[in-house]
Image (cartoon, rainbow, N blue to C red):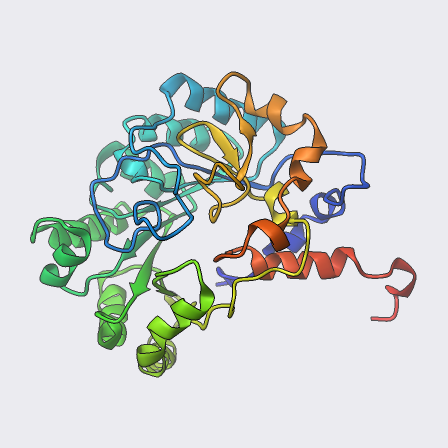
Length: 356
């Protein structure tokens, strides 16, 4: 099994990378598009960045927004036509709560586009789940609670919800399709002592991978680090033990639990990744990235309410350079490391390139 989590995957797309700088004349299709089909969610997680008041992500989100069926079909047609390689459905809300998710997945299954979804798995059932199992590339389930009681408290759901989620996960694996099923375990101070036991339980359940991720509690990196500092070494020790004891050819523990950038500040002034992985929101705005979604002040590239995505994307290239990360992105940024790698590549002196 190759590496599932690596910032180097983008370097398989040299033509796209070389088209990114402002001075290049050509606009090319994004490699990957995230679609947020609905902002409605059946869970109410205490830390959800789209719903808490102190985080910039989701600050202008309306929970009523959803992509109309006809528009979703149009978007998928456009993505196929222009040559997008992958689509991920994510929140906003819960993708499997979107009433047209099965139809959207069927259309992608009949196309060359690889597709995947993030989910809480409470609605990972029926036709949509079966289509993803047999034709999707991966599904990743976000979990925080380690038993029924803790899960109910984390998400403000009924006590039986945890068992429902685990049952849906097991049923998904029984479909027997090639789709990889992963878990994202969101770590905070309440579940920090349960990391190893949780990962071990997920392996026994039959999932393919578990990603360990820190809960984001602030726009400020120092505040996040201060929150995690009391539990940091305990979590890291369990992560090392899980990787040593549980990793094998059919199961991967990916440790993404790390200290965050001290100030989340950026030293660069343009974002290559927004041309590689943009976001289509349920409000039909196109956003620069998943950390800018539903931020109307500094995250919007434009709207496709009254135009097709293909026409919007290939219009004025200046939209790709309107966001200045050093000015506009002083917060958590999942693309930061990838941007640094791309900028280092793009800024390398061509005459000196042979001296590797």
